[in-house]
Amino acid sequence: MKLALESPPLPLLAEKDGVIRVGGTRVTLDAVVAGFANGATAEQIAQDYPVLSLAKVYSVITYYLHHQQDVDDYLEEQRKEGEEIRRKFESGVGMQGIRERLMARQQTES
Image (cartoon, rainbow, N blue to C red):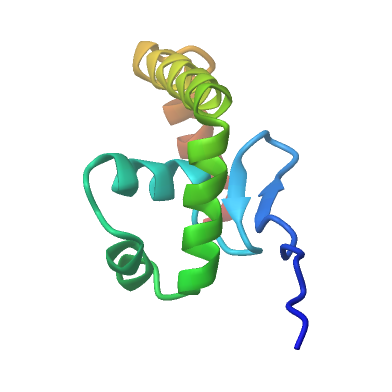
């Protein structure tokens, strides 16, 4: 009996916005890595995200362990982008006059 010594493709997909998701789901690489970094087992992560098979969780964790610096750099970049978006939202950039526009739209629809 011969064993097939090949691996299935990595279940990670980069979306247009740069977010990496697992296996065609809405679960992000960030979520799986955060669970693992916080001490969750692959089984616990699969329970937390039922759309992920245990095999996919193990595959993502294996990828993380082999590419930890690259993944950590990606996660840091995602964190910085998130902070920038939050800062813009909180400062109201692009939000000036939104209340007036919404009120005007409501009156024209009435």
